[in-house]
Image 1 (cartoon, one colour):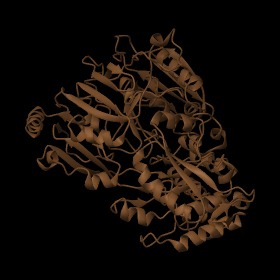
Image 2: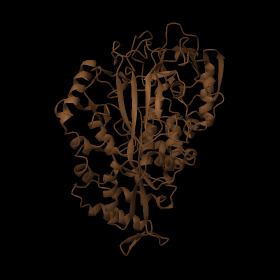
Image 3: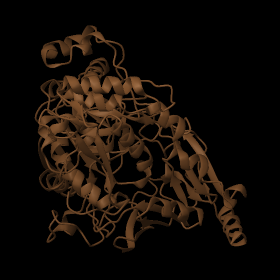
Image 4: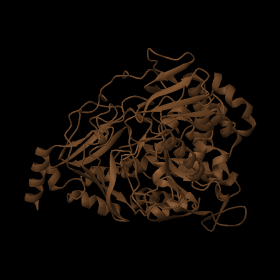
Length: 606
């Protein structure tokens, strides 16, 4: 999930002792009151007595060449974020709520023009050095000036940061319109200033980094594996935000160049846990002896999270995708019902919104306050947006989508294209052709049938799969025509929308606006979303933004699930309380009895 805490309508729990005009709290909640009091002993979804020990082995695809995940250059190791702590920690069972972690208190004045964090005196980096306000300020300035463009956009509304004492840091804002800033800043990973002195932050990092988090890098082989070891004397192990979590002694990540090999490694017992995102494999690939014997467990764990939008994303920097009618035609040519029936075993629901599976998804036609937001841009928007509900073509799943392809050709003709010698040719006389770039071969079973369908109307759509590091490099440089991309969303969209959709983000290397959207109405509506003063205003602004994005036909919408499909070797235990996030691997632990029985079963199977 790329989204941080997506928030609006700041509301704080106020302790008994509160300075006049300033709210002091142990937590921030954007959608209500935090569920846990100031003296809560641990999160209710953990086992505070969970035993420590054992190893969790995970898989990753591609390669890695460094440990600096904050910069554009290079490919950082998977799970490297485990070495860092943040000022606040998100609750896995509450929407947009975070509790003090490195920070023991948060202060926000009534005018919301600043936020102050007071650090816990016991907070330490893993070399024993105290975490100070100077470290927080240095981290912020470094990320804002040297990290990915995403951070500059996310922190754009921060005027400055000041250190008011060894443990007190204050962020001043340019205005009080952006209400999610306190939570955004609270989720910033804090790095040690003293460790980075003499190192060039803008370059890939080959030394294991120092952090204050529950794990440190133990050993590694670039491109092949990395092992994280639990920090026995982690400063927060008995804190409310740390107790019962991070129970594995070691977490090892093995890299594979091929997804099929990674699956076989799991089946062979070399990998402990998989999050399965391919419906065909979920339905057919796990019928092997270890599962039949109960050594491997499969679960579909439901969640209550917004699912955002996944789809074929078009790079509108390319001339062939400039025309909205062309983009709509490409969407009409995709036969989701056939794919869901023949490839996905009927597992998925169609994405009909950029904010799917939430109250933020638009529907019907705009009216009332939403219509008032859209009205100033009526002459820049498709007329249909105001008169028709947005809809996607629905076929019978037979694969014979002649009617939809005919409509697609009609749209192409309106845009100046025509079929000559079985090729779709543009106004410039050039054949319409593009490349679908993939990072995972498993998506070929979706992209190749789509390309074959496009060939029926004279479009030459090639499909190319590259390794994940090359894929990321091309994505950062916007060197692609079409990719399959997911835009994650949360309950209260905010600053991340600036990075996803605005003109300012469209040309920054390594940015999140991979589509290249630059539209005056979109920019204005993103501002309305970020600056919404209450929940009703937020929902109205998001509905309007969603509608404009949908009618812009920037993506060929794909699908979503309302559960997580997980497969694991039967060596783990976890709290059975259902949580909003579905599952949290950090609250699992190794059950030594189960682990011994499963290991014995492996040996017998061999």
